Length: 463
Image (tube, rainbow, N blue to C red):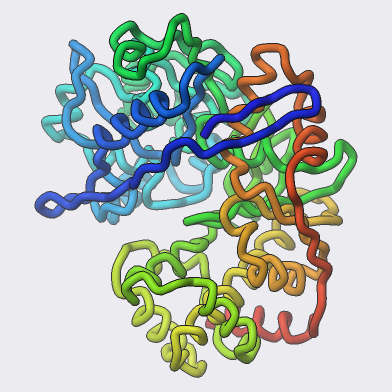
């Protein structure tokens, strides 16, 4: 993506899109990170001359480098099964409540902490001199300068969200060498310049600065929530995952927060992204893949007319994490809870979207209660902002107005941090005001029967 940014200008153009495919070799699921890097170079070449470059991606996964800076194999995918027993080993040394009090991170089996525990003693980890999270690895290949961007580092479960520094005591108790990580960077920090061979490959004229952004895509997306400075807002960053929560000034580290499985990740300007992970549109994406890739639009139209809340599943259930056979797994979950099994594709789509809206309702209500923060409006950003049915169902379920957009929030947040670093935007409030003035937004008012949502919520709680 390229963006032209100025006082009243924020124009986004898609110049290149490339696939991101998981690859299984033997029993291990990997990322094809070299193909991703080639896609970045192709995108820079297609973009033409630019004033700054910033990279964001998903969280938790990493590449290992040897003493010469060479990659020691393709990074392992967070959906790989190697971490299935890692939590037991971690909690034997640091009980779960102590771990949460120190790092504020929800339990997710793929957190970097558990990945490193699962990898302990492997030849690759033993040979590694440097560990770089995925956006930091791509930035390193562009600039030759290693760094660890803080918003992504905060998803490792090795950062203290109160200090914004490493949780040294936790790492020591678990035998994790923090020396593997490069020095911390914060959004807006300089990350180097494109190397000469990168300039030659992309046909750009140097110097081209690379700027650290909120390199966790959710951090960039939350930075692009077009909320007013005084709004009491919640956000839902929708895509493969739904990340639903609040933007806070300090973490919530209570035991009740831990048992509710809320996370405290760091955002722009040392804010806290207080949120819960929900399985998100992954459920729908996997169904479409299983069905051979049919056109989604007619399925959504048919789903809109299907009976509401006939069957719902827990969209946060880890049983839906692995790929494959998603329609069958959704049907099995309905059957196991005594609900009607969706008989058509449209009925399955309606089940998924009702379930996601219900999960959004439960998560935002819990977040507001645990953080003692009122919520007056919900902002949906990311790809799900284009799904009008999901947005309306979320408004209905939450009983709150929903503002949908921008759909490319991560890209816009990324660029706005660069623009601020280069003096084109003043502060976070100005960034959001610019988004509200320039981006197409849609508003959805709550409709329907609130009691029906409460009844469906009780069905999930009783499972």
